[in-house]
Amino acid sequence: MSMMDGGMMVSIFRITGQHAAYLVQQLNDFASGRRQEMMMNSIAGSLTPPEMKAVALYLSASP
Ligand code: HEM
Image (cartoon, rainbow, N blue to C red; front, side):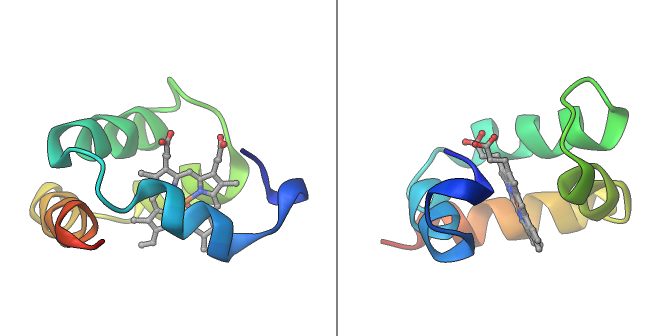
């Protein structure tokens, strides 16, 4: 999946329903730079740990 295959809506639907622990891990990896993607490194880097958990729980509970 990338920005080239249909944009943000595709990305959003592919992360809803994923396990919250997986999403938090990805956000931490973006924040630390372990995983590289310019937009996400910037976005994840601006989230606090409680915010990462909240957004991960929201996405994992979304169909
Ligand atoms: C609070 C807002 C956002 C959250 C919580 C979020 C969350 C995530 C997560 C969890 C992933 C990893 C998905 C996976 O590996 O399964 C991801 C990937 C990605 N996100 Fe975001 N995202 C947000 C906003 C954005 C925005 C605004 C953009 C672009 C303008 C963006 C672009 C991307 C891209 C390009 C990827 C990589 C997709 C890939 O590697 O296949 N995200 N995002």
